[in-house]
Amino acid sequence: MTRTVYVNGEYLPETEASVSIFDRGFLFADAVYEVTSVLGGKLIDFDGHAVRLERSLNELGIESPISKEDLLEVHRNLVKENGIDEGLVYLQISRGADSDRDFVFPDTDKVKPTVVLFTQNKPGLAETVKPIKVISVEDIRWGRRDIKTVQLLYPSMGKMMAKAAGADDAWLVEDGFVTEGTSNNAYIVKGGKIITRALSNDILHGITRAAVLRFAREAQMEVEERNFTIEEAQEADEAFFTSASAFVMPVVEIDGVQLGDGQPGPVMTRLREIYLEESLKKAE
Image 1 (spheres, one colour):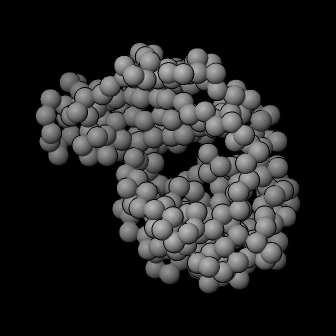
Image 2 (cartoon, rainbow, N blue to C red):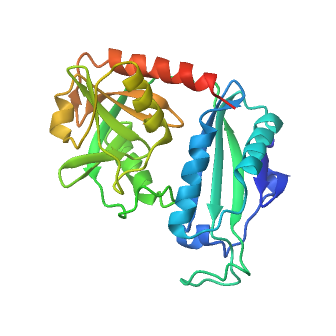
């Protein structure tokens, strides 16, 4: 079935959708994005994604081209039109398309941002729990990882390094400490305590991260936000990651070292249950 997508105010069949070859998202990765999960035909934590989107746009000096209310309507329309019960809605906003290629930002009176949305159907999204093996790779990304830009080449390379090593994903390491995964936030559990890197420009301010940590504290779980090393992670009782597209997922092997019995741990399992249960209550 041909998907219906959204491009600059129009709903179109995906086969008819296009953007300019001069779009700055294509030429300079001058764009931001968000991915919102859909469960039971409803959007999970849309408000959090909308707030982060606005922050990312502001940090890059891109004027928001669409209101939060209109953006929610587009999300809902695409979910309905494409019959998405479980899946994702991808949103990308670039600085727009000038008449030629130039490093200098275009005049905002003449060039408006490009807005693109599409859905991805992912049946079984909520039920899928896959034990993940990770490798560690050097983190050589730019310094503003808190802005959710489309500069994803190195994370893609990290995933390919993991695949070549027979693993599923990579954890990025800078100055001896884990920053995050290629497309997720990273955690370890030791003695029942959940440990994850504190927020800064070094990592993405994950929407799922914020929800999971809030739910953990409400469940009287101990949370410590600090740096940790790969060696400390290898000695942990559990490890896991969070993301909007995978929720809470167990990490069972790090650089060839198995954690525990190689199966999802109790803390991660409980957090995933709480996250799904609480998030569905507030789904839009």
